[in-house]
Length: 352
Image (tube, rainbow, N blue to C red; front, side, top):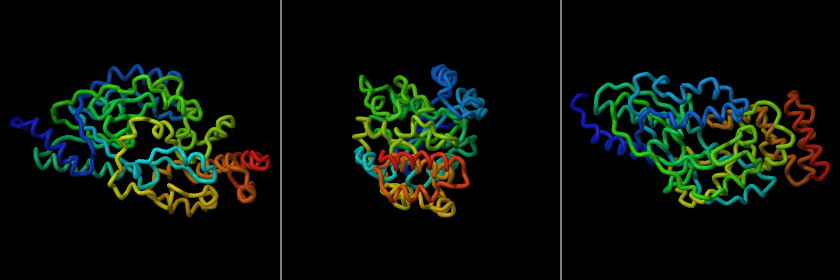
């Protein structure tokens, strides 16, 4: 490695990354000191809710060298996932239909991107010989958006998402920690300006300030990370969103540059981009497990799935078919499900 042409290698890594389906590849060092105060303030305000792992591992998040000793350069990549360039909010008005966040409609991205990162590492190894590396895809205490911002892939917007001037924000991130002394890229600069569309559209008011998200009010947290009861005051605000929420991305002006992904694995399965709440509510646990195999939706679990659907049905236009379906689950073995079904029934019978 003493004779390694790192500039040439960096250019080749970008090329190999593009060949593997990544829309952008960037390089950054390990210094995350300027991000630490933001994370620690967020944790101190308890904005992480029940995500205890955020607090337990925050030191590792702020210090990649402690997470993977010997790391010199982090390769950050992004991959587009949206199958449509339409950013209309219309689906959120169709109360009998389920809304599932775009990222979760197809195959679970974790395995796909990790496999591509492993392939990228193999190509690097073929060129330089054995080297130290470790691949991460939202699977360890990594400040992936901070690293991506430092690597020039985009800036962290007011909605806390990473935004790219040429691609918007519909993309996944991944990292390859390496012990290679690669040249680093210039950090991306912010371009949100005075826009606050994402802050204003949030149904539950989860943004307490620009770039300050109280996860305890975030619909993505409520429908995925929260394993207990959804606070009753927030239930009517969830609408028909049963897994995640895309509002702050749908409204973002930069997403006019959305590019459709060519990854077939990100295509919606089981019509999850256009399906009735009632149909999903009738899935048995066996059907849920079968139809969410290899899907990020598995994270919520079957009981969480029914809980979320009950809330959405309670928010739907009153319908005798919905009332009948809810009544059939009124005595469900799970107290969590019964509670949310009872709430939904009360709203449906009252005609909302």
